[in-house]
Picture 1 (spheres, rainbow, N blue to C red):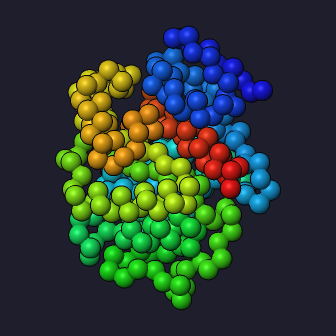
Picture 2 (cartoon, protein in one colour):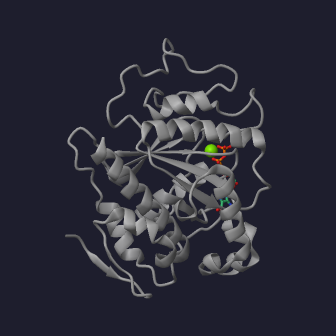
Length: 282
Ligand SMILES: Nc1nc2c(ncn2[C@@H]2O[C@H](COP(=O)(O)OP(=O)(O)OP(=O)(O)O)[C@@H](O)[C@H]2O)c(=O)[nH]1
Ligand SMILES: [Mg+2]
């Protein structure tokens, strides 16, 4: 058995029942979330399978949604201090533990999805990335897709070069996602479903999108505006509401902030739980 959490509204959760944890998210996130426990959970996570050294999380979404910034924010939360920025292209981000060691979590960052067929990352390339065929450092080309003969193509990906969790990233502070970008997202999601890869979403920039949340991040679940944003996104993209996590990235802060951490940790725990289930089921 694992740890038992007794929540303020009466739910009792055993951390080994990971999916229930995620499903009850809306009951869990409150001002009295246990950052220390969540942080310990994240820091101590280890995949059990011998052939998998790390859990691989792939972020995708419209250009400028906050993908790179989220990866950098996760690094800040786990390391407990500000760390320097992530960059675009297909970059593998590890989070340093000590001098020569890293946490067994890998984030893959990718260029954003854009309107039309000649700009932004191509959905077919994201499909290849999910299957582990894209080598680290590969620069995506909006005009021509990666193909099997290219130097950036990994012909035989190992179990931990494949993606274990797919995270759709969108901004709470942008206009509705256009039909063309939604179509690309649908193509990516279909492929992930076929591969059985678990999918969640993060809604970034909740500070910019709502005055109440800007003043006090804890108001996030009281905000009608943000709830509507999440509902609209859920309806348009087909990701259930309880798998959409509102976050504020570390964008201009100079110090770590508990409320920013709380939301990021909540999303991160779900990524770890879902990814771990996937690793153990395949
Ligand atoms: N206020 C605020 N700004 C954010 C947040 N997340 C991202 N930003 C800002 O939004 C801008 C774009 O963020 P990036 O992380 O570069 O977005 P991206 O999705 O990686 O963009 P591409 O790689 O170009 O597709 C940056 O200026 C960030 O500082 C957030 O939660 N709140
Ligand atoms: Mg980026």
